[in-house]
Image 1: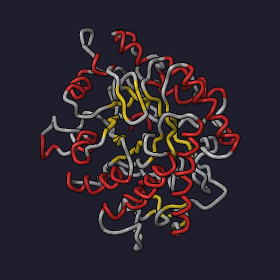
Image 2: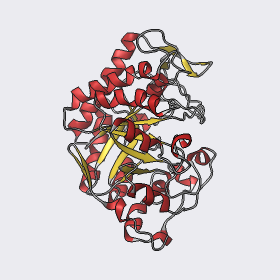
Image 3: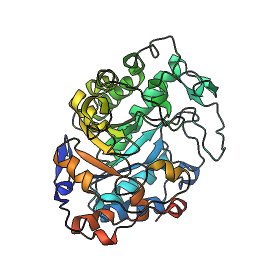
Length: 372
């Protein structure tokens, strides 16, 4: 890797009002360091250090909307209420002072139970009262609940713009609330928010996007994170074909999404190898092809194993960036998100930009227990 030319990662990029100095995004990663839901000085310093380390766009940890039981851990931050929003104002000001760009990831955890076993003080909600197929938990949302959730996402997005954030990401992946509407295994509704097709089950997400677009105006960029896999089942695929992927994602783009953030466990895996081979387009590549949207790819960049190893408490050593450069050069996707390595190496981006590959660190699971 000592002679690898990574300059393509450092080309500027812009979309709507967002201008980035490079193509590298900090992936959202749940940290749970916000007691009472309020991000403090430690959070502001944590994000500022990544901006100082030359990350092009920082996406925050998941931060929840104003709904009962919207979070599944006691120290997940709110994105509502005067105290929490003041904390986020301090975060974005700190990032801007370091020359960075940032958006909050807006989240509702749905029926997903945290591994800690913590329980909220209100019933959890989901499309059909299911955490996963045949696993009841909480209550099915009424249409009034759904309308209130849509409004809460829009309010949070408007607050993000008001506070000075540069973009906003809606979390629609990994088996949480929005994704539970996409997934037939957890959406068994018979009203207009359910149905046998992925296009029908995309209605809830599309209504959220439309409401967010109305709240933030035409020039504020909207990102949505999506995934085929779920934490409840790594093997799930919402779209088995490109046509089904178009049915799933195009309604979101038509509703106002500018950027699809396509989460994979390994970014180099082809999405439909039966169509274009073992070196074929990944999830973000196909999403770009079928919708025309800007896409972010993500998944084990710079590491020798995937995110499931982190779930098991395992570390990762640095890996070559050759495959990433190759795929960026063929314009398969537009931006690349980096996750675990930025927890252990805040200066990873700056090192890659300088060619200091020997100094790159892997991922140490001890990083999950501290905010540095």
